[in-house]
Image (cartoon, rainbow, N blue to C red; front, side, top):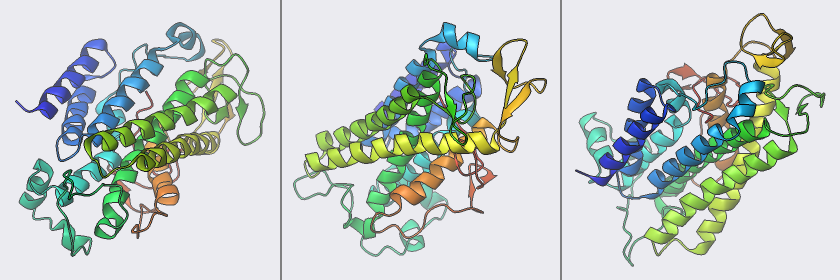
Length: 339
């Protein structure tokens, strides 16, 4: 039995047994885990595992106090398949494309071929080097490889997980801040848990979370490939930090404007029920829909400036079964999984 299959199975079963994943979430996590771990590099899978473990731990941290601040708080998260896919779909697609193009022997390449997809032709690629970690090989972050597409897909994974983990830590740790948060649009003090509210602790946590993702991704490449220098590690940490902080800011702005927050006077908590008083935002998007869009927008505008990137996701495109629009933890309508 292959290592990716075993690891993906263990992670999904662990999440199911601990109650952090619903049955649909466990199945989706298995598929996401397998296709991220399989292929020519360990970097994508290592990043996914790091994101899952750190995010899950943050979700459980301070659970007693969160239960008093959040109406309907679930101790272990209990993520369904849609939520898992919200936080992984873009990165999964990027990892799949990278392996299908640069690792001809991978399961990703076989699937693409069976579907009749000629990815090099679709992307107008003429020279496609097979990924090689030998002294004659190349680093996936090299901007000169295949018009920068290798780098683009790697940064798509980095953008996805740095944005998600940054937002996750900001939400899960920021709500525990002793100081009352302020709404990003008006700087007015609001109850903890309000969509669009920010605190110093939550903001620092988001930057730290993005840096963790960059550290894991960069370290994996440096360890497995001698062509990836320490400079590559510094680069992934820097952009991961930017992604975590920017993702949190974007999430807060969208949450304060197009994601409704209601406050229950009787329970003294932010509630999802309709009986509460609206204190911020309008009811356009849910928290799940907020995630994927923010990720797609951030990758397009922050990382798509890299050489070789000709086009990112745009409004009107489709992702994860929903049309891209503005949302709270995302700028496109799609799912999410803030651990």
